[in-house]
Image 1 (cartoon, helix red, strand yellow):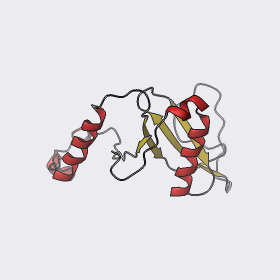
Image 2 (cartoon, rainbow, N blue to C red):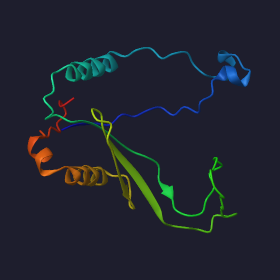
Image 3 (cartoon, one colour):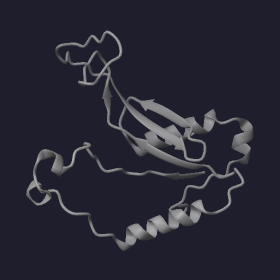
Length: 151
């Protein structure tokens, strides 16, 4: 099993030009320079993805997201039904952290929710839950690799 966490930069869908400002005045910089380390990482990923796979290696992508408060809150999005939201935050303390694993070959998604903090223990618990969801035959034929050079 190969696991990797991909960190994506935040993008709000708008460019500086859409604000009517030239890029120079908006503070938005030009495309950053390529780094040798980044190129090395992607070369290594491409080398691993080109290797023949007999089905015993599962490529997983794993990521935890922001804490979600539970309750009748409105986040300003569109709804398909009769949406009722509280006018005020009534101090709800119940929160959940979503953590997902995507099988990159099949596209299968496994989501695990935790109620404490985003820690390495929580991520390991998520992997264990995913592993338990596999059939015994899949567990028998899946090779687990989790080392710094497994990418």
